[in-house]
Amino acid sequence: MKTTTSNRIRISLPCNYTPILSVIISLIILMIFAGVLTADFVMWDDDINMLMNKKSGGISFKSLYMAFTDFDSMSRYGPLNSVSQIIMYHYFNFNPFGYHLVNWIFHGLSSGLLFLIIRNFIIIYLKHSENMTLTQWNINIAASLATLVWALHPLRVEPVAWIAASGHNQALFFLLLSTLFYIKAILSESDKNRYIFLIFSAFIFYTVSLFSQAIGITYFAVLLILDIFLFKRIEGTRRWWKTQTAKRVLMEKLIFATPAVFAGIMSIVVRIKSAGLSHPPITLSEFGLIDRIIQAMYITFYYLWRHLYPVDLAPVYTTLVSFNPLSIPFTSSTLCVIIVSIVLFFFRRKIPLMAGLWLAYIVLIIPVMGFFEHPHFPVDRYSLFPSICLSILIAFGIITIMRNKYFFISSISVLIITIFILSILSINQIKVWANTESLLSHTISTLGNDPAKQNIYWRLGKYLYQNGNTEEALINFEKALAINPYNPSANIYLARIEYENHNLSKSIYHLQKVLITEPNNFFVHYRLSELFDKLNKKKEATYYFERAVDLQRSHHFSQNKNDKSGS
Image 1 (cartoon, one colour):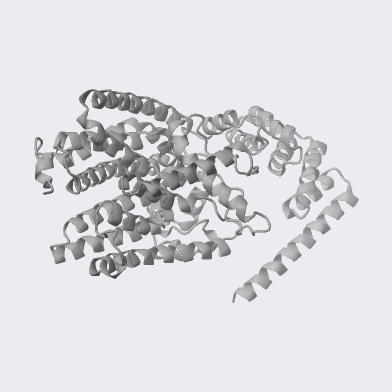
Image 2 (cartoon, rainbow, N blue to C red):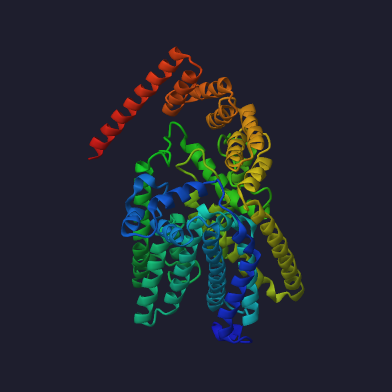
């Protein structure tokens, strides 16, 4: 006879303490991440977002309507995140504190929700297990430590400290809320009215998450994985799909898949229509199928080992800009993913929880595998949702070793030390995101001899120039040109600085270098005509002026043609 849940969970802590523990965990996270509240906007898309917010003009029917329909100004489809940005701009204008405050609160709330979710997972797991006795304290310790490992990890800093990544935190909060309501719905299946209310709420929160940022576009499949491996709603019998329970469960998932499909379609529409904000999908001839698969395997393994080695974190990593799929990092990543998948498949009945978590992790990592992207950048924020699987694994690992007192105490001690170290690393990483200068200087230090440093140098130079530090700006622009003498952005700013120093010939020199890589740049041609005119070189001035006029005519003709074809 199977042991009942009450036999396995000895109540040594009143159940009403659970919400208090959730609040305490949230407060701990908020305290560690409090440094983000003093951070500034960074010239890493924050400037573009602020320009878009200013363009929206605050809260109005028009701005809210445009948040859902202005595809030309979108880089991705996340209308509810745009609405949040509009609301924050209305109340905080250009004060970064308000934007960071909302992001900070979302992370704290998500941490509290994750504690409740992991705690429920453990209790449900015990319900289907035999010969395991745990107290409420045991469960809360496991859930608390697992949550803290996730929430205090330095990989969480980017989406919390970076205003432009606020959509990820907003989306995650509603995904976790959806998960919690889904769990409650499954536990209330015997009460039809309560079940319908809870499952509908879970569906609404999932939709809100997708409309904030589609990081959980594959999440509906994770719900099915939970139904099979944790909730045991679908048994692994022959012709299981013909049972009434299975049909009901699958119908649930089809309903949850509806907003995911819609979000996917809208993402494709935005990708096609966005005015230069997104690159068109790369073709198979440009980036082959084997390369895509190898890249996906690398990403899958990357976000596993990156959690074990959270060092030299930066807003950009250039590993996948150009890579050899047969090199050791990529072949070893592929082999590891394949071996783990095969082993867990064959042992899925003995260790179903690990098999389910691995499958859930792969499903959640699919949207950020970069299967349709090249170059693809494996940034920190992409780990936000998939990494929860690792924390759940930690929680179940803790409850598994609780029978051995000494092993349990030593493991808990190691985890506490790990959490302390992660907290220190996160606090230091928050300092990196304090302002543009600290962020870009740190990024330069992580790139080594990578040619991509040129793009960071000119960004840092631009920031310093705009803040009146022309001398330091000049040094950074020249460092960019040392890597790439024809870097257009660095040359344009150097041309401006030389003009301000009354060195017209040097200004012309830098602008002409821009035309080598951007021969149809209207602004540069027009500016050259002005400079040559100031030097009284009429022939050169006339040439560049006529060229600028031709480019402007060509631009207007092309624009009118596109407008007519669009209508």
